[in-house]
Image 1 (cartoon, rainbow, N blue to C red):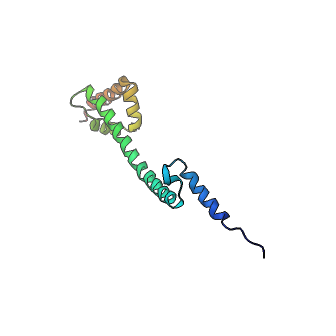
Image 2 (cartoon, rainbow, N blue to C red):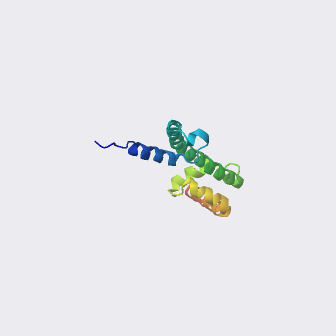
Image 3 (tube, rainbow, N blue to C red):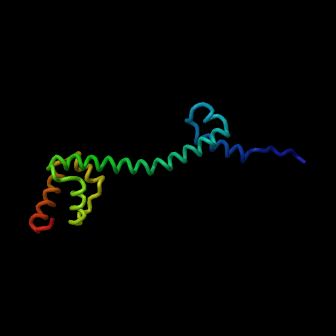
Length: 125
């Protein structure tokens, strides 16, 4: 019987894992056991932080919209604007409203004034 050289599949698996951890520091990119532990930690962190990133961006957008809206009038706030938008069935999400608030404040002023004027003319409070 001829001798069988072992380990080709295992080596291929380890090489694939090493490519994932190539830019990790120290033993985290050298030792196979440590690489697998770090890979699972990295993937868990990535999965967890995708959700928190969405939450953080939503908070940022709300803060930006609220800052611009409160410059219009003391009694007008972010929550009133969103409520009025939903009531008028205007489909503008928070990301778009925040971009409008940063790039073109006058446009956001026009949107809010249009909503307020419509409320006053129809008698809706």
